Image (cartoon, rainbow, N blue to C red; front, side):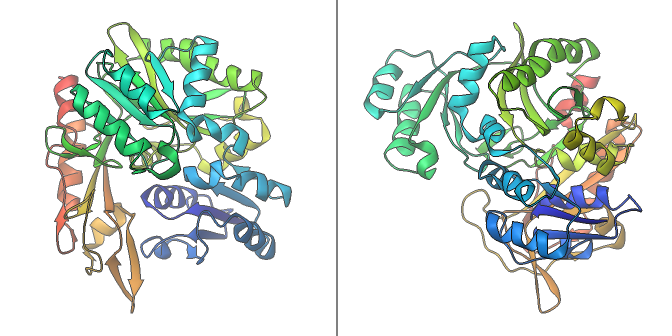
Length: 421
């Protein structure tokens, strides 16, 4: 079988490594992939958003199954384009990917169908938003409507900060067109949980829960990033809470999308806040999270391709989706200066055991050598019987990844450790 994976980050590397366990797969191609992924798949120099070129390549190469992993190509209709050429895909069509593509759409969906989320107001007009912020409860959350690489959310502690965020998005265009409309949202409190779920549009099979670490600095300080590390499972996410989420959030979301004529197939990501008033949705993503995938898929005991094909074929009810009763920790190494300005082009080296445990996100091959080419560069994952051991091992293995200016948080998993005790 020939498989195509669209995307080129650490998440895609984790997906490819997981797919490789299936002996029926003879070749895996990645569009565009990266220098690290090149060790596990054939990288093709087609960007993830070059939809027509991807479809043409898939036909020419006789791809049997495609996995569209990132948000941009999903929202742009990559699955639609591939399916139109007769190639079955993992991932939602564009009309369902809007659940992430527009925060206004997803908030309105939740309001319409009674799915618990934060109170909110939507603004197309900057002055109206600024006027509202004169009396809005503080702190508040300002969100760009469209895709913004996971960075289009600002938690404002003061009215001035909130107004600055609105001006930056709506007038300054810091997130481009994505910020021309904004959502001003109630600030929720409680532990955050990420739950990725396989769905075929009717059945929902959640993966193991995880805890992301979004801020750049120890103790959750500094700017938001794409994620500096993850642990799984999340100790705050008990069986009772999982059952409640299935009944009040997961299934109602899938039914709501069906009701709207936007059947969702693929991986639906639920970003949850466990508030004093019960679990609420902070955000939906229309795909695997990054770096959550790097701790969730290594714990998957079922065959990933079989599960993915069942979401496409509507047969998920017949497929076993099981995870190891273990703990995983992923530590991200980033370039110094990330998430703002950083330098690229530093040579990377790995010990053998670090290489086997590391997913490469931001690197390219230059003259046969792997060099840094992004902000988040690698994610090193360890699995163990206890969370404490998984954290310790992830840091030990991550010591075996070297490049100039490498930066990592030193407290990944500590909050989870405290909670589990």
